[in-house]
Length: 411
Image 1: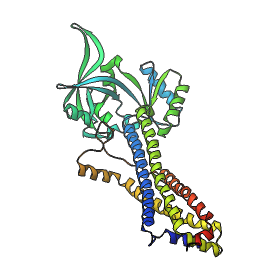
Image 2: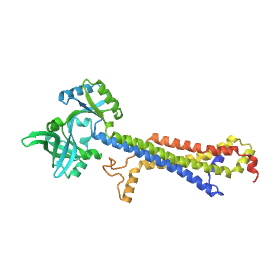
Image 3: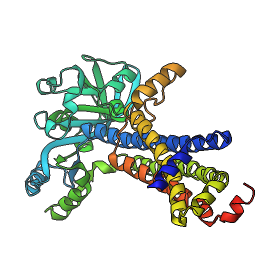
Image 4: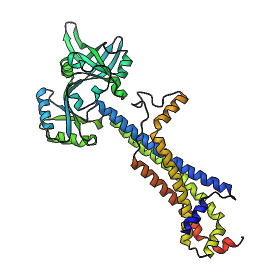
């Protein structure tokens, strides 16, 4: 028990050695800053992945199934096969085609998706994301479409305007081979929060898209499952157990390279910031060595009074680990508060410096998300504490090896 008391006394700032006090404060502050930064960075990385995934899945389905024979009978057989999978909680038929959208003098390449209005809510939230107009008009008007908010802004269109769609399929006419074109009325504008889809996705009725695009469109079934992380396994099971040849893709195939890049970046950032914590932790080595040198007489007196070498080691372990716990605790508090309020911090930063941290179109989302996970907090804290414990080993060894007679010779 006396080791703890003496160790805590050693942690106090020394009145005789202000430089030692400065090194002690600097080491503790470095550990706290490193822990706080790492927690915030990991939370932002987690937030990016979750935000992009959630926004993506509000537009995309978990799994898309395309029969190689592009006909209604094949779609019906797919629907029958899906009944054998309890993981599936929703399904909806759709068709998709590439086209060129024309509004006035502006042209833009788009993906046109034809949906079944009544069953679409089973697989996505796109109909809930209407910010202007009425999606119900899709059931009343055959050639009507919904467009994304960024697309509407880029093309200068709004609800009620006409949008011409040009198919990639060519048709023979009296003047030669020409692309097929059709005018669609814009009846609604959606905002999913994902720039890629808000700027390039056009949604129409299933029958209208099929009748216009004909051979250039692909029809399939969109599927929603209970756990989005099981999508690759369910996709594989569907392919293996189907009675007809299918092409199946799941949400993990979309922006696959982006998700992989984020994972690598997260690991590298964690490694770099752990090295920063390690530097701060090993600053404790110099501080503890200086403390040992300053407390030589005290150590010698304790040894002559009967203190064992183990007790001396325990005293300096209390000093090193105590400062480590203090630094980690401060970093933990700052990190958690910073991760929970990162949005407000970034907004203040943007207003103060006058530029956007996340420009649209580059980072897919326009705000800094954060997802604080207990696992990350525990791993960072425990690792930082282990680093401080390792840093205290050598100074403790020096204190234990100190000769009593040598220490008291010049006192």
